[in-house]
Amino acid sequence: MPNLVKWWFVNYSWIVFLLVLCFLPRLTLSQYDAVDYELENEYDDDQDVHDDQQQQPPPPEATLIPPPPSQALADDKPTIFKLPEHYSVHKSPPLIGGEPIPVDFSMLVFNVFDIKEILEEISLEVNYKLYWKDTRLSNWTKNIDPGQKSATMSTALLHKVWHPDIFIDHIKRVTQPQLISPASSLKIYSDGSLRYTSRILLVLTCRMSFYYYPADTQECNVTMKSFAFSTKQIDLRWRDGIGALLAKSIEVHNFDVALETYPDYLQTTKSNNFSALVFGIKLRRKLSYHIIQTYIPSTMFTVVSWLSFLVPPDSTPGRMAICVTTLLTVTAMFGATKQNTPNVAYCKALDVWMLMCISFIFLSLGEFTIVLKLRKNETKKPDPPKKDEIDVEKNNHVTTGNNASPPGGTNSALIQIDPKSATLSPTPEPVKAVIPPKPTPPPPTKYFLTASKIEKYAPRVVPLLFIAFTCTYWPVLLMMSDYYSLSTDPEMFYSV
Image 1 (cartoon, rainbow, N blue to C red):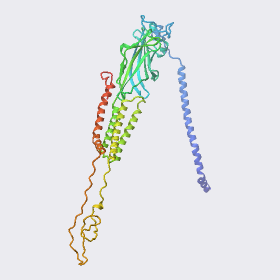
Image 2 (image 1 turned 60 degrees about the vertical axis):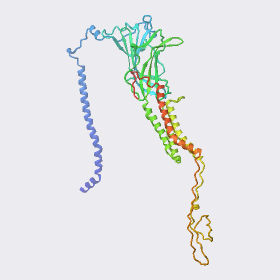
Image 3 (image 1 turned 90 degrees about the vertical axis):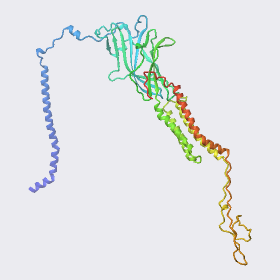
């Protein structure tokens, strides 16, 4: 029997172990459910107690006594106004003393944050204010406290009262920044005057001229006028005679910014005259970018092409490699600069500079081609004498006779043999070999002389011409573009 129990325990104990693992989590969860049930019961008991406390009547001393009617009216002063009877938003206010209604305008430019030259667009962040007077609303603000001169109203009221219909010429988009509500406000004064203030983002079309690029100054005019009301009804003017202003020194990467306000003017049409306000935004391009990125590199490559003058004309591959490499590099640089500007039908100042640099490099290449052609036209030199004609024969031939000469035609030493005595006769003195003189080279031809003169004067004339062009290019460019014409403007912020 003990052996049977032992055998069963050894073979089936793992089944008991698995059953314990399966039922243990359920027991644990049931304990947590019991705890949650107790907590819910406690929460329900507290809620019942709280409800019972709320249902109990308050003590007599906690009873609120309503204030007297006069005090309630003083604390709850009405702030909601109603438009006067027979008020029409479609009818303009009555004239003041027979004169048109003055509409004052003020503008503060906060930022010029995007200038797209290819699209000819400019983006502005401005804060503007409109002031006008509607005498029909003079008694509408009688509920304002005597110590306050104005009351700030909701901008939704703007569409219920008459307001000037101001618009801006050449405008593409107008957006208004907002977080909870649009960035605008409407104030009404006790005499019926109204002031509307708003912060907007303008995207304008600006006609740009690139004749003097990159020393150009772009001027974008912003024209504001009424669309429907003529000068007989409203008179648009700057507030206190002060035009548009810059809020701070505006830092634009490639431009210096200035504002210029023009006098008020009338825009005449076939039907009526309309008053208008104009101010200009002047954008003067900074030269530092193109001086570093374009002018200095192109000048350096032009100077590198002049190093070909130091290479002898016989080294054709080396000289051609310098000229062709610099020519291709400057041509690629010229194409890259044209991608940043609009495709216009006229030639810009930067195009003139790049074309002249290419011309001077091409001049170095053309000079070498002409020299090479002239040197090939030179007459051929005679062939030098052969070596075997001036060498003495190593193997002397035996001849008879005193006046015999070797086949070479030279007076060589001979050995004479007397056949009778069979003895050697004395030999005469050896004669030295005569070397013929070298042929005199022919005089240089006119082609060779011309090529030599070109090689002599080209390294001096070409750099002098480029220096003369540079000294003429910059004064003419800065004077014709009036680059420094705004130097006396206190609102111009400069950097080279």
